[in-house]
Amino acid sequence: MWISNAGFCSVMIVFARIEDDKNITGFIVEYDPKNPNGITMGEEEHKLGIRASSTRQVFFNETVVPVENMLSERGNGFKIAMNALNVGRIKLAAACLDAQRRTITESVKYANERIQFKTPISSFGAIRQKIAEMATNCWVGEAATYRAAKDIEDRIELRKNNGKDTHQEAELKGVEEYAIECSILKVAVSEFVQKCTDEGIQIFGGMGFSEETPIESAWRDARIARIYEGTNEINRMLSIGMLIKKAMKGHVNVLEPAMAVKEELMGIPSFDVPDFSELFSEEKNIIKNLKKLFLMVAGAALQKYGEKMDKQQQLMLAASDILIQIYLAESAILRAEKMAKKEGEDNVKEQIAMAKLNLFHAIDVIETAGKHSIISFSTGDEQRMMLMGLKRYIKYVNMPNIIELRHIIAEKVITKNKYCF
Image 1 (tube, helix red, strand yellow):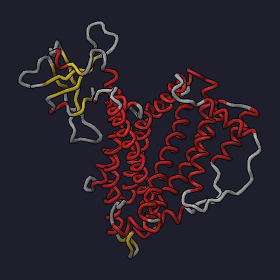
Image 2 (cartoon, helix red, strand yellow):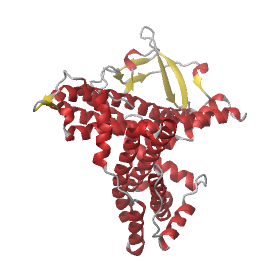
Image 3 (cartoon, rainbow, N blue to C red):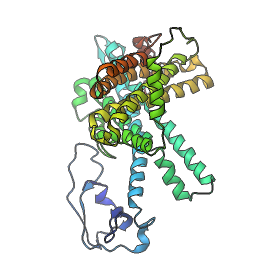
Image 4 (cartoon, rainbow, N blue to C red):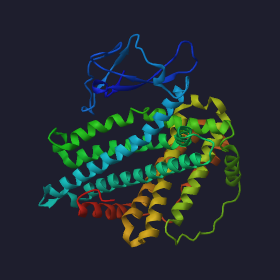
């Protein structure tokens, strides 16, 4: 059920089990309504959004598929399906980014045109805050998506050139290695677009609730992004679950760095004031500390629950929020730093502001998720030590003025009358 584009497709990718095989196999199945070959379609689903897309149930009854239509090898379907999901997740992120760009542009245009108290509503601080946050989320989502896409592309090329993998194997393995990042992007950017369209409606006010405006359909269409390609809850748990699986197999070392963080917390902290005069020097230091915080939480939880960690779903959701925010914040800082080196700091002050604003918000999310995690599985001295570590690792030396950062970002978007980054 819920087969997208079923109403007008002529070719389907179908996964099924051959006889008593343990694993499923992928097939290319052709469909001709005049010669249906045992294929029947259900009625069109009437959906909240994405109404231009046909969605139906598809039924197979003794459908004949030639052996040459088998995808890859017999029994290899699960791997193909999982990698299709991985690719689908990063592609979904890219699609959501464009929806955000369009929504921001429409919202800013309306805010500049809408006059209240003899002045455009884009001059009001409450509206400027929304515009700045919408633009920041979009720009950060771009940074993370471009970063992951380039990493995947580079890994595929590396595998192609090593002479050991075929073209198909290189693509399958290359994407699979970044499955965690694909899940992170799917969650983060789908939630960004939902928030963006919701704030767009607020900027439009009563008009935003009308079908006459593009914001109404944008809001409805955005809602599905948190559901398909695996719900955000599933993807959150997958990101942590895959990391735990790699740790259990020895592919990723989590416990040793976690123990090193624990020893650091038991030692006497340095009271020296570091030199943060260079651009992003403090932000990079915070990112380093946030990674220590994640290792502290994940390592302690893994020690307690081991392979049964997957039963602790609320803990996994909280841990994934920490992981997601670190990846987004680091991606934004790397992007802004690269732009500053290439174009000069004065020419990218809005991008610098967005990277700093995003990190500030990331710390808020991480602090809450960290507290929930630590309190859920620890007690006594261990809990007190970890909560102390949480405070240490989220600490700023020079707290940013987020109202000023928002002003810098909003001014550029409002002046350009569109999303302009």
